Image: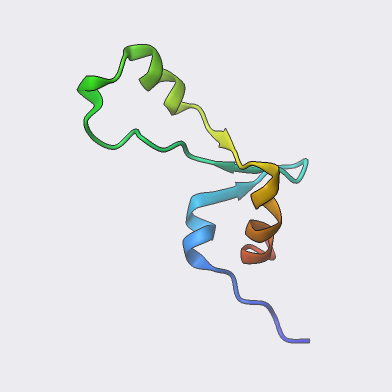
Length: 65
């Protein structure tokens, strides 16, 4: 069997943690931050977890993650 290629766009955006869940960055933290509260910006710093429905497709894109 040949090796499976990794989708580089997915590899740069997601990390697989020890228990098999997928960690990702949160959206809405790039610009127009003056409109957002300090609490909201602080919460956006923390890593998010990918919803269970999308995990299977991301695992396929990062086969050796």
